Image (cartoon, rainbow, N blue to C red):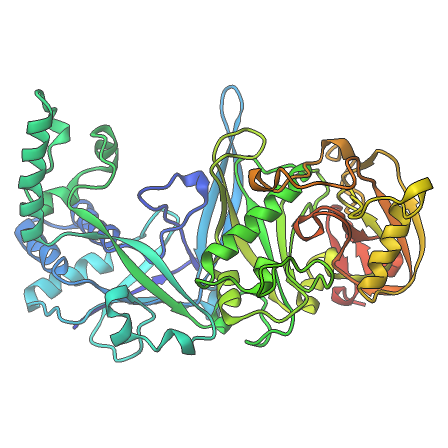
Length: 543
Protein backbone atom coordinates (compact mmCIF):
# COMPACT_ATOMS: atom_id res chain seq x y z
CA UNK A 1 0.00 0.00 0.00
CA UNK A 2 1.17 3.51 -0.86
CA UNK A 3 -0.34 6.45 1.06
CA UNK A 4 0.33 10.12 0.28
CA UNK A 5 -0.75 12.86 2.69
CA UNK A 6 -1.38 16.35 1.36
CA UNK A 7 -1.77 19.21 3.84
CA UNK A 8 -2.83 22.54 2.28
CA UNK A 9 -1.02 25.02 4.51
CA UNK A 10 -3.27 28.04 3.86
CA UNK A 11 -6.43 25.97 4.22
CA UNK A 12 -7.24 26.55 0.55
CA UNK A 13 -6.93 24.51 -2.63
CA UNK A 14 -6.98 26.40 -5.95
CA UNK A 15 -7.20 24.41 -9.19
CA UNK A 16 -9.24 24.79 -12.38
CA UNK A 17 -10.40 21.57 -14.09
CA UNK A 18 -8.97 20.80 -17.50
CA UNK A 19 -12.15 21.47 -19.48
CA UNK A 20 -13.28 24.64 -17.67
CA UNK A 21 -12.44 28.35 -17.81
CA UNK A 22 -11.15 30.03 -14.68
CA UNK A 23 -14.07 32.49 -14.66
CA UNK A 24 -16.58 29.68 -14.47
CA UNK A 25 -15.66 29.34 -10.80
CA UNK A 26 -15.24 25.55 -11.06
CA UNK A 27 -12.81 23.73 -8.76
CA UNK A 28 -11.07 20.44 -9.48
CA UNK A 29 -11.92 18.37 -6.43
CA UNK A 30 -10.50 15.93 -5.62
CA UNK A 31 -7.11 16.72 -7.19
CA UNK A 32 -6.87 14.45 -10.22
CA UNK A 33 -4.16 11.75 -10.45
CA UNK A 34 -3.20 13.37 -13.76
CA UNK A 35 -2.41 16.61 -11.91
CA UNK A 36 -0.61 14.85 -9.04
CA UNK A 37 1.69 12.89 -11.36
CA UNK A 38 2.52 15.96 -13.43
CA UNK A 39 3.34 17.82 -10.22
CA UNK A 40 5.81 15.12 -9.21
CA UNK A 41 7.45 15.36 -12.63
CA UNK A 42 7.64 19.17 -12.35
CA UNK A 43 9.38 18.91 -8.97
CA UNK A 44 12.01 16.58 -10.44
CA UNK A 45 12.76 18.93 -13.34
CA UNK A 46 13.08 21.97 -11.07
CA UNK A 47 14.80 20.59 -7.97
CA UNK A 48 16.25 17.11 -8.44
CA UNK A 49 19.87 16.16 -9.02
CA UNK A 50 19.70 13.93 -12.15
CA UNK A 51 22.78 12.01 -10.99
CA UNK A 52 21.38 11.12 -7.59
CA UNK A 53 17.80 10.72 -8.87
CA UNK A 54 18.03 9.54 -12.51
CA UNK A 55 15.12 10.26 -14.83
CA UNK A 56 14.82 6.53 -15.56
CA UNK A 57 13.78 6.00 -11.94
CA UNK A 58 11.30 8.87 -12.17
CA UNK A 59 9.81 7.31 -15.30
CA UNK A 60 9.53 3.94 -13.55
CA UNK A 61 7.85 5.54 -10.52
CA UNK A 62 5.31 7.50 -12.57
CA UNK A 63 4.34 4.55 -14.77
CA UNK A 64 3.84 2.32 -11.74
CA UNK A 65 1.43 4.87 -10.25
CA UNK A 66 -0.70 4.72 -13.42
CA UNK A 67 -1.37 1.00 -12.97
CA UNK A 68 -4.03 1.49 -10.29
CA UNK A 69 -6.88 3.91 -9.64
CA UNK A 70 -6.16 5.74 -6.36
CA UNK A 71 -8.68 6.16 -3.55
CA UNK A 72 -9.13 9.29 -1.44
CA UNK A 73 -9.86 10.28 2.12
CA UNK A 74 -11.04 13.85 1.67
CA UNK A 75 -11.35 16.46 4.41
CA UNK A 76 -14.54 18.38 5.12
CA UNK A 77 -14.69 21.20 2.59
CA UNK A 78 -16.67 24.23 1.49
CA UNK A 79 -16.32 26.02 -1.84
CA UNK A 80 -15.75 29.78 -1.98
CA UNK A 81 -14.62 32.39 -4.45
CA UNK A 82 -13.31 35.95 -4.56
CA UNK A 83 -13.59 38.49 -7.38
CA UNK A 84 -10.73 40.65 -8.58
CA UNK A 85 -10.64 43.41 -11.18
CA UNK A 86 -7.30 43.08 -12.94
CA UNK A 87 -5.97 46.40 -14.32
CA UNK A 88 -5.35 46.61 -18.05
CA UNK A 89 -4.43 49.45 -20.38
CA UNK A 90 -7.96 50.02 -21.67
CA UNK A 91 -10.26 48.64 -19.02
CA UNK A 92 -10.40 46.35 -15.99
CA UNK A 93 -11.06 42.63 -16.30
CA UNK A 94 -13.14 40.73 -13.77
CA UNK A 95 -11.42 37.50 -12.66
CA UNK A 96 -12.93 34.84 -10.40
CA UNK A 97 -10.68 33.03 -7.93
CA UNK A 98 -12.55 29.91 -6.83
CA UNK A 99 -11.08 27.66 -4.17
CA UNK A 100 -11.92 24.81 -1.82
CA UNK A 101 -11.56 25.56 1.88
CA UNK A 102 -10.29 22.72 4.09
CA UNK A 103 -10.28 24.73 7.32
CA UNK A 104 -7.75 27.05 8.94
CA UNK A 105 -5.34 26.70 11.84
CA UNK A 106 -6.23 23.89 14.21
CA UNK A 107 -9.34 23.11 12.12
CA UNK A 108 -7.31 22.43 8.96
CA UNK A 109 -7.54 18.85 7.71
CA UNK A 110 -5.22 17.01 5.35
CA UNK A 111 -6.25 14.65 2.56
CA UNK A 112 -4.96 11.17 1.75
CA UNK A 113 -4.36 9.59 -1.67
CA UNK A 114 -4.05 5.81 -1.48
CA UNK A 115 -2.91 3.16 -3.96
CA UNK A 116 -3.94 -0.02 -2.12
CA UNK A 117 -2.17 -2.58 -4.32
CA UNK A 118 0.98 -0.62 -5.17
CA UNK A 119 4.31 -1.53 -3.56
CA UNK A 120 7.48 0.36 -4.43
CA UNK A 121 11.10 -0.66 -4.06
CA UNK A 122 13.25 1.19 -1.47
CA UNK A 123 14.99 3.02 -4.29
CA UNK A 124 11.73 4.29 -5.78
CA UNK A 125 10.46 5.21 -2.31
CA UNK A 126 13.57 7.35 -1.89
CA UNK A 127 12.81 9.16 -5.15
CA UNK A 128 9.18 9.66 -4.14
CA UNK A 129 10.09 10.99 -0.68
CA UNK A 130 12.42 13.55 -2.22
CA UNK A 131 9.74 14.73 -4.66
CA UNK A 132 7.10 15.02 -1.93
CA UNK A 133 9.43 16.88 0.41
CA UNK A 134 10.18 19.47 -2.29
CA UNK A 135 6.62 19.90 -3.60
CA UNK A 136 5.73 23.49 -2.76
CA UNK A 137 2.24 23.68 -4.20
CA UNK A 138 -0.41 21.59 -5.95
CA UNK A 139 -2.75 23.23 -8.44
CA UNK A 140 -2.19 26.95 -8.78
CA UNK A 141 0.84 28.52 -7.12
CA UNK A 142 -1.19 29.87 -4.16
CA UNK A 143 -2.15 26.31 -3.13
CA UNK A 144 0.77 25.78 -0.76
CA UNK A 145 1.05 22.15 0.24
CA UNK A 146 3.09 20.00 2.59
CA UNK A 147 3.29 16.53 1.02
CA UNK A 148 4.57 13.38 2.69
CA UNK A 149 4.29 9.60 2.64
CA UNK A 150 2.61 7.51 5.32
CA UNK A 151 3.62 3.97 6.16
CA UNK A 152 0.01 2.76 6.06
CA UNK A 153 -3.62 3.61 6.77
CA UNK A 154 -6.66 1.51 7.71
CA UNK A 155 -9.45 4.15 7.78
CA UNK A 156 -12.56 4.56 5.64
CA UNK A 157 -12.40 6.09 2.16
CA UNK A 158 -14.95 8.71 1.16
CA UNK A 159 -14.00 9.16 -2.51
CA UNK A 160 -13.53 6.26 -4.88
CA UNK A 161 -14.43 5.04 -8.38
CA UNK A 162 -18.14 4.36 -8.80
CA UNK A 163 -17.28 0.79 -9.76
CA UNK A 164 -15.87 0.29 -6.25
CA UNK A 165 -18.75 1.98 -4.42
CA UNK A 166 -20.37 -1.20 -3.13
CA UNK A 167 -17.10 -2.55 -1.84
CA UNK A 168 -15.83 0.61 -0.15
CA UNK A 169 -18.85 2.69 0.90
CA UNK A 170 -21.91 2.21 3.04
CA UNK A 171 -25.25 1.84 1.19
CA UNK A 172 -26.52 5.11 -0.25
CA UNK A 173 -29.85 4.61 1.53
CA UNK A 174 -28.07 5.00 4.88
CA UNK A 175 -26.40 8.28 4.02
CA UNK A 176 -27.65 11.37 5.81
CA UNK A 177 -25.88 13.67 3.37
CA UNK A 178 -24.96 13.50 -0.26
CA UNK A 179 -23.37 11.00 -2.59
CA UNK A 180 -22.01 13.11 -5.42
CA UNK A 181 -20.54 11.85 -8.67
CA UNK A 182 -17.61 13.82 -10.12
CA UNK A 183 -15.45 13.36 -13.20
CA UNK A 184 -11.74 12.84 -12.42
CA UNK A 185 -8.94 13.00 -15.00
CA UNK A 186 -6.97 9.72 -14.98
CA UNK A 187 -3.88 8.70 -17.03
CA UNK A 188 -4.06 5.52 -19.09
CA UNK A 189 -1.80 2.60 -18.29
CA UNK A 190 1.30 2.29 -20.54
CA UNK A 191 -0.22 -0.67 -22.43
CA UNK A 192 -3.54 1.06 -23.03
CA UNK A 193 -1.72 4.19 -24.13
CA UNK A 194 0.18 2.30 -26.85
CA UNK A 195 -3.03 0.72 -28.13
CA UNK A 196 -4.88 4.04 -28.10
CA UNK A 197 -1.98 5.93 -29.73
CA UNK A 198 -1.66 3.50 -32.63
CA UNK A 199 -5.39 3.60 -33.33
CA UNK A 200 -5.51 7.39 -33.06
CA UNK A 201 -2.64 7.90 -35.53
CA UNK A 202 -4.16 5.46 -38.01
CA UNK A 203 -7.54 7.21 -37.89
CA UNK A 204 -5.90 10.63 -38.16
CA UNK A 205 -3.86 9.77 -41.26
CA UNK A 206 -6.86 8.20 -42.96
CA UNK A 207 -8.93 11.37 -42.42
CA UNK A 208 -6.33 14.04 -43.27
CA UNK A 209 -3.93 14.21 -46.19
CA UNK A 210 -1.57 16.47 -44.28
CA UNK A 211 -1.10 15.82 -40.57
CA UNK A 212 0.55 18.50 -38.41
CA UNK A 213 3.14 17.35 -35.90
CA UNK A 214 1.29 18.90 -32.96
CA UNK A 215 -1.71 16.70 -33.77
CA UNK A 216 0.27 13.52 -33.11
CA UNK A 217 0.33 12.07 -29.59
CA UNK A 218 3.70 11.67 -27.82
CA UNK A 219 5.59 8.39 -28.20
CA UNK A 220 4.70 6.97 -24.80
CA UNK A 221 2.66 7.76 -21.69
CA UNK A 222 5.55 9.32 -19.78
CA UNK A 223 6.23 11.74 -22.66
CA UNK A 224 2.50 12.60 -22.74
CA UNK A 225 2.66 13.64 -19.11
CA UNK A 226 5.52 16.04 -19.96
CA UNK A 227 3.59 18.07 -22.57
CA UNK A 228 2.91 21.68 -21.51
CA UNK A 229 -0.71 22.76 -21.29
CA UNK A 230 -0.16 25.59 -23.81
CA UNK A 231 1.18 23.09 -26.34
CA UNK A 232 -1.91 20.91 -25.86
CA UNK A 233 -4.15 23.89 -26.56
CA UNK A 234 -2.13 24.79 -29.67
CA UNK A 235 -2.55 21.23 -30.87
CA UNK A 236 -6.34 21.57 -30.43
CA UNK A 237 -6.49 18.68 -27.96
CA UNK A 238 -9.92 18.58 -26.33
CA UNK A 239 -8.51 16.21 -23.68
CA UNK A 240 -4.85 15.59 -22.80
CA UNK A 241 -3.46 12.66 -24.83
CA UNK A 242 -3.32 9.52 -22.76
CA UNK A 243 -5.96 10.65 -20.25
CA UNK A 244 -9.61 9.80 -19.75
CA UNK A 245 -12.44 10.79 -17.41
CA UNK A 246 -13.31 8.35 -14.64
CA UNK A 247 -16.46 8.77 -12.53
CA UNK A 248 -15.69 8.99 -8.81
CA UNK A 249 -18.18 9.14 -5.99
CA UNK A 250 -17.73 11.55 -3.09
CA UNK A 251 -19.65 10.61 0.04
CA UNK A 252 -20.02 13.19 2.74
CA UNK A 253 -22.30 13.29 5.77
CA UNK A 254 -24.62 16.24 6.30
CA UNK A 255 -22.59 17.35 9.31
CA UNK A 256 -19.40 17.64 7.25
CA UNK A 257 -20.61 19.97 4.50
CA UNK A 258 -19.66 23.16 6.31
CA UNK A 259 -23.06 24.79 5.74
CA UNK A 260 -25.73 25.77 8.23
CA UNK A 261 -27.69 22.58 8.80
CA UNK A 262 -30.52 21.36 10.96
CA UNK A 263 -31.77 17.89 11.80
CA UNK A 264 -31.49 15.23 9.01
CA UNK A 265 -35.28 14.97 8.59
CA UNK A 266 -36.67 18.44 7.98
CA UNK A 267 -40.27 19.38 8.72
CA UNK A 268 -39.71 22.52 6.62
CA UNK A 269 -36.98 22.51 3.99
CA UNK A 270 -35.25 25.76 3.13
CA UNK A 271 -31.98 26.55 1.36
CA UNK A 272 -30.22 29.67 0.14
CA UNK A 273 -27.63 29.81 -2.64
CA UNK A 274 -25.22 32.49 -3.79
CA UNK A 275 -25.63 33.05 -7.54
CA UNK A 276 -22.52 34.01 -9.48
CA UNK A 277 -21.72 34.53 -13.12
CA UNK A 278 -19.96 36.89 -15.46
CA UNK A 279 -23.29 38.66 -16.09
CA UNK A 280 -25.87 38.26 -13.34
CA UNK A 281 -29.55 38.24 -14.37
CA UNK A 282 -31.76 41.23 -13.68
CA UNK A 283 -34.51 41.21 -11.06
CA UNK A 284 -36.94 41.59 -13.98
CA UNK A 285 -36.01 38.01 -15.00
CA UNK A 286 -36.95 36.54 -11.61
CA UNK A 287 -39.65 34.19 -12.83
CA UNK A 288 -37.28 32.54 -15.32
CA UNK A 289 -34.49 32.13 -12.76
CA UNK A 290 -36.95 30.63 -10.27
CA UNK A 291 -38.06 28.16 -12.92
CA UNK A 292 -34.43 27.20 -13.64
CA UNK A 293 -33.86 26.43 -9.94
CA UNK A 294 -36.90 24.16 -9.98
CA UNK A 295 -35.67 22.40 -13.15
CA UNK A 296 -32.21 21.90 -11.62
CA UNK A 297 -33.61 20.30 -8.46
CA UNK A 298 -35.92 18.08 -10.50
CA UNK A 299 -32.99 16.85 -12.58
CA UNK A 300 -31.04 15.93 -9.44
CA UNK A 301 -33.90 14.19 -7.65
CA UNK A 302 -35.39 10.73 -7.92
CA UNK A 303 -36.88 9.24 -11.09
CA UNK A 304 -40.31 10.40 -9.89
CA UNK A 305 -40.16 14.04 -8.67
CA UNK A 306 -41.80 14.71 -5.32
CA UNK A 307 -45.03 16.69 -5.05
CA UNK A 308 -43.15 19.45 -3.21
CA UNK A 309 -40.97 20.09 -6.28
CA UNK A 310 -43.45 19.16 -9.01
CA UNK A 311 -46.33 21.21 -7.57
CA UNK A 312 -48.89 18.59 -8.59
CA UNK A 313 -50.85 15.93 -6.74
CA UNK A 314 -50.90 12.19 -7.50
CA UNK A 315 -53.46 12.77 -10.26
CA UNK A 316 -51.27 15.37 -11.90
CA UNK A 317 -53.46 18.33 -10.89
CA UNK A 318 -51.77 21.60 -9.81
CA UNK A 319 -51.61 22.28 -6.04
CA UNK A 320 -53.07 25.78 -6.30
CA UNK A 321 -55.25 26.10 -3.22
CA UNK A 322 -53.01 24.89 -0.41
CA UNK A 323 -49.72 26.42 -1.65
CA UNK A 324 -47.97 23.67 0.33
CA UNK A 325 -45.50 22.94 -2.47
CA UNK A 326 -42.09 24.53 -2.89
CA UNK A 327 -41.19 28.16 -3.62
CA UNK A 328 -38.20 28.99 -5.86
CA UNK A 329 -37.37 32.61 -5.09
CA UNK A 330 -34.66 34.76 -6.71
CA UNK A 331 -33.32 37.44 -4.36
CA UNK A 332 -31.52 40.75 -4.82
CA UNK A 333 -29.84 41.00 -1.42
CA UNK A 334 -27.75 44.12 -2.09
CA UNK A 335 -30.44 46.14 -3.86
CA UNK A 336 -28.57 46.80 -7.12
CA UNK A 337 -31.33 45.39 -9.31
CA UNK A 338 -29.44 42.17 -10.13
CA UNK A 339 -30.19 38.69 -8.74
CA UNK A 340 -27.40 37.52 -6.42
CA UNK A 341 -29.12 34.71 -4.47
CA UNK A 342 -31.81 32.09 -4.97
CA UNK A 343 -33.90 30.69 -2.14
CA UNK A 344 -35.74 27.37 -1.91
CA UNK A 345 -38.54 26.94 0.61
CA UNK A 346 -41.09 24.15 1.06
CA UNK A 347 -43.88 24.59 3.65
CA UNK A 348 -44.46 20.83 3.66
CA UNK A 349 -41.92 18.10 4.53
CA UNK A 350 -39.66 16.98 1.70
CA UNK A 351 -38.26 13.56 0.88
CA UNK A 352 -34.65 12.44 1.34
CA UNK A 353 -34.18 12.70 -2.44
CA UNK A 354 -35.05 16.40 -2.32
CA UNK A 355 -32.70 17.02 0.61
CA UNK A 356 -29.86 15.35 -1.31
CA UNK A 357 -30.71 17.38 -4.43
CA UNK A 358 -30.54 20.60 -2.41
CA UNK A 359 -26.95 19.86 -1.40
CA UNK A 360 -25.91 18.74 -4.88
CA UNK A 361 -27.22 21.71 -6.89
CA UNK A 362 -24.25 23.55 -8.34
CA UNK A 363 -25.42 25.61 -11.30
CA UNK A 364 -28.38 26.91 -13.30
CA UNK A 365 -28.28 26.43 -17.06
CA UNK A 366 -30.54 27.39 -19.93
CA UNK A 367 -30.08 26.36 -23.56
CA UNK A 368 -32.16 29.16 -25.04
CA UNK A 369 -30.82 31.88 -22.80
CA UNK A 370 -32.64 34.56 -20.86
CA UNK A 371 -32.99 37.86 -22.64
CA UNK A 372 -30.00 37.26 -24.96
CA UNK A 373 -31.31 34.13 -26.70
CA UNK A 374 -27.96 32.39 -26.04
CA UNK A 375 -27.22 29.53 -23.67
CA UNK A 376 -26.24 30.79 -20.22
CA UNK A 377 -24.90 29.28 -17.03
CA UNK A 378 -24.70 30.58 -13.46
CA UNK A 379 -22.92 28.87 -10.59
CA UNK A 380 -24.91 28.54 -7.37
CA UNK A 381 -23.10 27.97 -4.06
CA UNK A 382 -24.98 26.63 -1.05
CA UNK A 383 -24.83 29.15 1.80
CA UNK A 384 -27.41 27.82 4.26
CA UNK A 385 -29.80 24.90 4.51
CA UNK A 386 -32.25 23.79 7.19
CA UNK A 387 -35.51 25.04 8.64
CA UNK A 388 -37.13 28.43 8.09
CA UNK A 389 -35.47 29.71 11.29
CA UNK A 390 -32.01 28.85 9.93
CA UNK A 391 -32.57 30.99 6.84
CA UNK A 392 -34.15 33.83 8.84
CA UNK A 393 -30.64 34.54 10.17
CA UNK A 394 -29.23 35.15 6.67
CA UNK A 395 -32.07 36.58 4.54
CA UNK A 396 -34.81 39.12 5.36
CA UNK A 397 -37.25 37.19 3.15
CA UNK A 398 -37.65 34.66 5.99
CA UNK A 399 -37.96 37.15 8.85
CA UNK A 400 -41.07 38.29 10.73
CA UNK A 401 -42.98 41.55 10.19
CA UNK A 402 -46.41 43.18 9.99
CA UNK A 403 -45.53 45.35 6.99
CA UNK A 404 -44.43 43.79 3.70
CA UNK A 405 -43.52 45.48 0.41
CA UNK A 406 -43.23 43.86 -3.01
CA UNK A 407 -39.78 43.30 -4.48
CA UNK A 408 -41.36 42.02 -7.71
CA UNK A 409 -44.80 43.01 -9.11
CA UNK A 410 -47.95 41.35 -7.82
CA UNK A 411 -50.23 39.91 -10.54
CA UNK A 412 -53.69 39.09 -9.23
CA UNK A 413 -54.50 35.39 -9.92
CA UNK A 414 -58.26 35.64 -10.48
CA UNK A 415 -60.38 37.65 -12.87
CA UNK A 416 -62.13 40.78 -11.64
CA UNK A 417 -65.90 40.77 -11.25
CA UNK A 418 -68.27 43.22 -12.87
CA UNK A 419 -68.33 46.84 -11.75
CA UNK A 420 -64.82 46.66 -10.34
CA UNK A 421 -65.62 44.12 -7.65
CA UNK A 422 -62.98 41.61 -6.47
CA UNK A 423 -60.09 43.79 -7.52
CA UNK A 424 -56.38 43.32 -6.57
CA UNK A 425 -56.82 44.44 -2.95
CA UNK A 426 -59.78 42.07 -2.45
CA UNK A 427 -57.83 39.21 -4.02
CA UNK A 428 -54.85 39.80 -1.71
CA UNK A 429 -57.16 39.62 1.32
CA UNK A 430 -58.84 36.51 -0.06
CA UNK A 431 -55.52 34.80 -0.73
CA UNK A 432 -54.29 35.61 2.78
CA UNK A 433 -57.49 34.13 4.20
CA UNK A 434 -57.08 30.94 2.16
CA UNK A 435 -53.57 30.52 3.62
CA UNK A 436 -54.78 31.11 7.21
CA UNK A 437 -52.75 34.32 7.54
CA UNK A 438 -53.68 37.17 9.90
CA UNK A 439 -56.14 39.78 8.69
CA UNK A 440 -54.88 42.24 6.08
CA UNK A 441 -55.50 45.71 7.49
CA UNK A 442 -54.28 47.80 4.58
CA UNK A 443 -53.25 47.37 0.94
CA UNK A 444 -51.39 50.36 -0.55
CA UNK A 445 -50.49 50.54 -4.24
CA UNK A 446 -47.10 52.18 -4.88
CA UNK A 447 -47.27 53.18 -8.55
CA UNK A 448 -45.63 51.91 -11.70
CA UNK A 449 -42.05 51.73 -10.39
CA UNK A 450 -40.00 51.36 -7.22
CA UNK A 451 -36.32 51.67 -6.30
CA UNK A 452 -34.33 48.44 -6.39
CA UNK A 453 -33.02 49.12 -2.85
CA UNK A 454 -36.50 48.95 -1.37
CA UNK A 455 -35.26 47.27 1.82
CA UNK A 456 -31.52 46.90 1.33
CA UNK A 457 -30.49 50.55 1.71
CA UNK A 458 -27.51 50.49 -0.68
CA UNK A 459 -25.76 53.65 -1.72
CA UNK A 460 -27.87 55.65 -4.16
CA UNK A 461 -25.35 55.36 -7.00
CA UNK A 462 -25.93 51.60 -7.28
CA UNK A 463 -29.70 51.47 -7.14
CA UNK A 464 -32.03 51.78 -10.11
CA UNK A 465 -35.73 52.05 -10.86
CA UNK A 466 -37.71 48.85 -11.39
CA UNK A 467 -40.69 49.24 -13.73
CA UNK A 468 -43.48 46.70 -13.52
CA UNK A 469 -43.87 46.64 -17.29
CA UNK A 470 -40.28 45.35 -17.67
CA UNK A 471 -40.80 42.20 -15.61
CA UNK A 472 -41.01 38.87 -17.36
CA UNK A 473 -44.27 37.05 -16.72
CA UNK A 474 -43.64 33.72 -18.48
CA UNK A 475 -41.48 31.01 -16.88
CA UNK A 476 -40.47 29.36 -20.16
CA UNK A 477 -41.61 28.78 -23.71
CA UNK A 478 -43.70 25.84 -22.50
CA UNK A 479 -45.83 28.13 -20.33
CA UNK A 480 -46.13 30.98 -22.84
CA UNK A 481 -49.73 30.03 -23.60
CA UNK A 482 -51.00 30.39 -20.04
CA UNK A 483 -53.79 32.92 -19.58
CA UNK A 484 -53.12 35.66 -17.04
CA UNK A 485 -56.01 37.51 -15.40
CA UNK A 486 -53.64 40.44 -14.77
CA UNK A 487 -51.53 41.76 -17.65
CA UNK A 488 -50.11 44.83 -15.87
CA UNK A 489 -49.17 43.99 -12.27
CA UNK A 490 -48.81 46.22 -9.23
CA UNK A 491 -46.23 47.20 -6.64
CA UNK A 492 -47.95 46.78 -3.30
CA UNK A 493 -47.44 47.45 0.40
CA UNK A 494 -49.40 45.20 2.78
CA UNK A 495 -50.02 45.69 6.49
CA UNK A 496 -51.19 42.67 8.53
CA UNK A 497 -52.95 42.73 11.88
CA UNK A 498 -50.17 40.60 13.38
CA UNK A 499 -46.53 39.91 12.43
CA UNK A 500 -46.11 36.94 10.10
CA UNK A 501 -43.06 34.93 9.07
CA UNK A 502 -41.73 34.96 5.53
CA UNK A 503 -41.59 34.14 2.79
CA UNK A 504 -44.62 36.18 1.72
CA UNK A 505 -45.55 35.58 -1.92
CA UNK A 506 -48.93 36.31 -3.50
CA UNK A 507 -50.55 36.11 -6.91
CA UNK A 508 -49.73 34.59 -10.26
CA UNK A 509 -46.25 33.03 -10.47
CA UNK A 510 -45.65 33.49 -6.74
CA UNK A 511 -43.83 30.13 -6.50
CA UNK A 512 -41.22 31.37 -9.01
CA UNK A 513 -40.46 34.89 -7.77
CA UNK A 514 -43.37 37.07 -8.88
CA UNK A 515 -45.36 38.77 -6.15
CA UNK A 516 -42.41 38.43 -3.75
CA UNK A 517 -42.57 40.62 -0.64
CA UNK A 518 -39.86 41.75 1.78
CA UNK A 519 -40.32 43.02 5.36
CA UNK A 520 -40.18 46.75 5.99
CA UNK A 521 -39.74 48.80 9.16
CA UNK A 522 -38.47 48.18 12.66
CA UNK A 523 -41.04 45.43 13.21
CA UNK A 524 -39.18 43.16 10.80
CA UNK A 525 -36.61 42.33 13.47
CA UNK A 526 -33.72 43.52 11.32
CA UNK A 527 -31.55 46.63 11.49
CA UNK A 528 -29.38 48.20 8.82
CA UNK A 529 -25.67 47.43 9.00
CA UNK A 530 -23.53 50.54 8.90
CA UNK A 531 -21.77 49.37 5.71
CA UNK A 532 -25.09 49.49 3.84
CA UNK A 533 -26.60 46.91 1.56
CA UNK A 534 -26.92 44.09 4.09
CA UNK A 535 -29.49 43.62 6.81
CA UNK A 536 -28.44 41.77 9.96
CA UNK A 537 -31.03 40.32 12.35
CA UNK A 538 -31.05 42.05 15.72
CA UNK A 539 -30.62 38.70 17.45
CA UNK A 540 -27.18 38.30 15.83
CA UNK A 541 -25.84 41.68 16.94
CA UNK A 542 -23.98 42.12 20.21
CA UNK A 543 -25.67 44.18 22.89
